[in-house]
Length: 388
Ligand code: LRH
Ligand code: MN
Image (cartoon, rainbow, N blue to C red; front, side, top):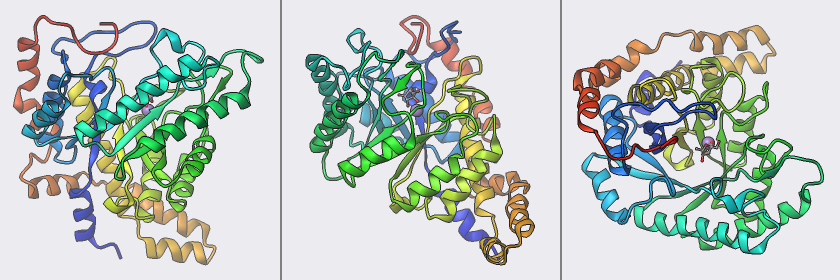
């Protein structure tokens, strides 16, 4: 039988990290629809992230992206975060927007360009020292567009060399999370295309190197929960970049395209002690809100993760194991579907009330009238994000 007080305790201690770039303008190659009231600097991004924390109570950490969030004084930014009851989370490197990295960053055939890329990664660790961040999140757009364009194996050698140098630089309590992605912006080879490649590099590097699973970075039909179960077993799951997609790396609100997949993923996380702080899984959102209001979209996303987590925690594991052990396929499947088909919204509303929060986070945000304030107040200056 499921212990409801343990379920409630786990939900109250859940921590979801929101992306600074999710509050800025974003779009596709076709168009960036800029929105009124969008932050103009990392301080205003934190002000918006604080609204998500105020409404949900489970989103006190904000990921930064360098150089998008570069400031003169990161300690001061940390103080600003603290004022809002927030902490600064993963530092995301960016070696995908510099002209020099057209043919690759750390995998480039030119040693001077590789050095430039490595220097950026090392600068990100310097920033982690200032922000107190544990995680360096590494995503490489590196790849090729045509067969023969470059040597696949040589690029892996160059990648491994750079990763080893970054690993060497990490402090004792710091980690590097290596993100993989099947394709885009490269369309023939991507140098870290799948979980196996990331896992193999992380295994060679050591315990401070872990894999990050971005839920939008797989080939259609990939069983992501299998990857999650496998990496948890190997103690190599460093975290998630949660979002959802119908086709490719759509970066839509997590749980909006496939809530059942999100439930299956969190079922593997919950049953393998992945929600426990000591397991060290970072639950990060990595989304772009191209047409929808950004702060409510992040609040909705946090609620979607909470709902999928609550359903996963309601799985009757004893009954599930009994069905699995006895080969009763339908019984075992039914246990999972019963949990998935449970309406957990009343339970989450109850938990929020017990935390002194509005049971409906979207209503809480509406009632704060923050949206009106930022639309009226943030006039002039350059909006953060794409298409600036
Ligand atoms: C790459 C990615 C990566 C981030 C970027 C914003 O597609 O998922 O995690 O650096 O999005
Ligand atoms: Mn990502």
